[in-house]
Length: 153
View (cartoon, rainbow, N blue to C red):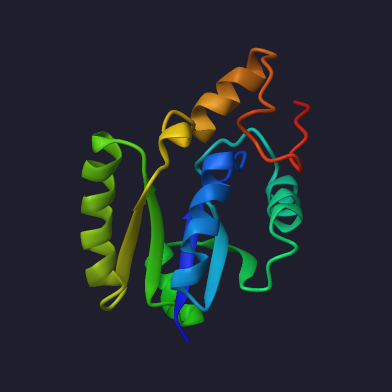
């Protein structure tokens, strides 16, 4: 079984994340959308809220599982038998960062392969960081997040 993990903080999940997962579905038997829990990282939304959103967004897709993990992503992948990491690239900066991480994950994760999908042009400007800033400034984020995501800070 080909299992991929799509890790992130999903604080909040964006339409870019959803696009990436949907485009990757034909490549894998199962995709685990996994929220990495990092006690050092300050999030805008609670873990429970982010998990609820992910479950709502992907509830109709039997090949998608929602999970959470602590520690190294590569260790989580090994624990659940995933041989692939799914990552999105919006620009050259993303590539430079993700390339280094993928090389480390390949070693730490015992041949864990990272599969990169390039963002569709209409989503390449969207990031959770930008969406959080809009939310903090009381901006309208409807076009950047799935319908299931309702934001009230």
